[in-house]
Structure formats: C-alpha cells, structure tokens
Length: 162
Image (cartoon, rainbow, N blue to C red):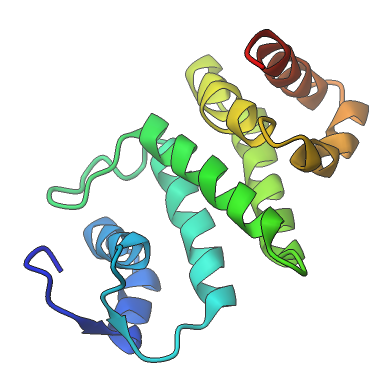
C-alpha cells in the first residue's frame, strides 16, 4: 500500500478484524486511499462500522502503539466527522452506522476525561454540526444532563464560525 500495491478485500477485512493496532491502521489507510487500492467487493456496512471503531480507538488514544500507520487523536476526530457527514449524505443514509457512531461518541464523552471530551466536541461534533442537517441526529443528547453540554458547546462554536 505504501508503494501503491493493491490488496484484496479479504486481506483488508482480516486486518480490520484483528486486535493489532498496526494492522487496523493499515486497513483504515487502505479504505481511505484515493485512488482505491482494494480489489474485490467491499462490504460497505462492515467497512463503515470498522472505520467508526478504529477512529474511536484513536480518539481515545489507544492506538499510540502504531509505528507506520499511526494517526493522531485530533486527526481521527476530524476524519470521523468527515465520514459521518459522508454517511449522512448517502441516500438512503447509513442509519446503522450513524447510530453506532453517535453511541460511540456518547460513550467517549461520558467516560472520558476533559481532554477526551474536548476531542469529541472540538474534533468531531463541531465539524459534524457544520452540516445543519446532521444536527438533528443528536437531538436526544439534549435530554441527557451531561451530553447536553457537548451539544451546546458544539452549537456555540458553529454559530461563532458560520
């Protein structure tokens, strides 16, 4: 992949399913490559779910052991926002993937320290909310006593940066 070589979807899928952070990073890189480097029929649902899982792992800071395919937490946060807006724009939208991403973001925010909460708000939510149609996906967060802060902060940033 680094040299532009092509790989099979089965290989990428085996990397995505591994617990090895380096292999997972290689799978993510293959899925993000442009031009595409994967041969075979990609299972979009499985690929999308993997991307959420991998990017959340990086946002949490659990992927720092990677040597070659290392991604920084804020880069992963921006990538997750970009992917979320992409999935949201599909017709019909990838509702299962969107729901999974929201659940993982909620978990990250609620379980995280202040730095992790900042990555969720500043790195992900603010950029998802740049797309007005995505904001309504997070309406139920407004009913949660802790998650409502994340929504308010992200919406405030969007208002300040039209």
